Length: 493
Image (cartoon, rainbow, N blue to C red; front, side, top):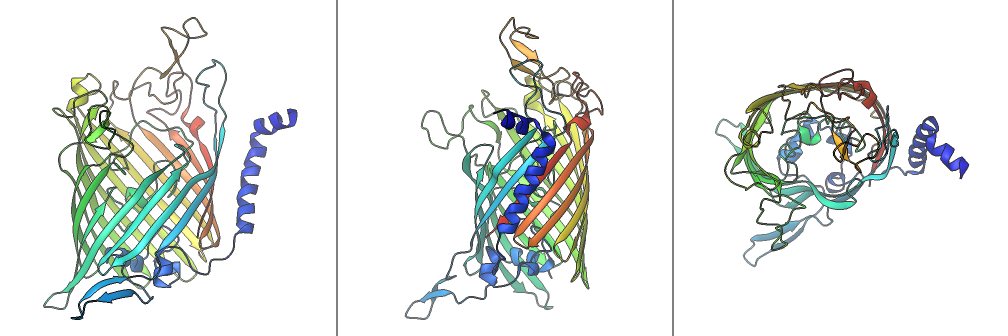
């Protein structure tokens, strides 16, 4: 027992153990003869569509925008006596399994929520962190999908994840230019996008393409940064001219998962027990221009959304709303060589907030602004060895009621140590000056022994957190105390 306690308390040994576990998984993996989902349908190597997953090449972008249609297998077909085609579907479904296991270490342990003067564990294991079943590819002529069901370690449940059903076709204009038109039905604004500058398949606010679930959350992020993911349903028509110029406008409605009407027990209609319920018709839009020359792809674009939310949580789903208008600019410079692959990309989001509902409750300013900026540079050699660096910055209005100037508290027994009025201050997630300003850098190493097996090590360093570099919570916690080491093994089959 003493040896076990020593092992649990030895952070350095735990980190070595995490790396050893991941390396063991790599040595036991088998080379992939056919890569998952779309590779099974197209019979093409993943390098055709990806630099390194999930980043897309030009071919991969066009494959997605044309409804996941390309296949090299003989379809199962059925025709009427008159020769009319009534069925055309792939002989095998495009299925795959994604598995992620991870280890996370936070630089300074958090205070224990129950015992004064004691800290929680600084490290966390997730085996698996995520387990996903995916379907992707052609369903019928001009109609395809990417759909995902995911087991989440934090909740211990399976849920609907990113889903995109898509119809697409092409029309040749009189001057021989090509016009691609399509329609996407999806549950996460930006999941339908083909560039890795937008939230669904971009770098997250905490780490690289997939983030740790063991971290200290900062106070604020724009709504478009996945705030509505899986809780809305949207229909987005789009047009693309000559595979270069793209435009899209979508409308989203509430479709919250994990929420039921307390009277009927059914998922709808929603009532005041739900929270952050989108109101009316919410707009998402996207435009970009791509220019390809030799092995380079250059992209500049804009995207945004305008969402209204009822606060719910005991308030009527009607009347005043909180309104968020996000406008973003993005760019990508991509080089895809035989041995070397380099991508530089970035995005900036400005969010205007009209917080009428919160203000009426005395919980915020009447209006606030929020800005999020992200840049990252990735390099891969032979699609096997990769390094990446990233920079993220969030800043916005000072709002002492929204972001909190007093330390956050936990419930306690009156009379116990530091317990006043049934609560004890613990801090960590508040801002002593009412500012959401957070800045961090990300350093990443990647190793891919095979293209469907990936080992990633991230270190996230905070120079500012919730408004300050030092003592940001009023109880002595510094921004760098939330620095995070994240080691992850991902594989797909």
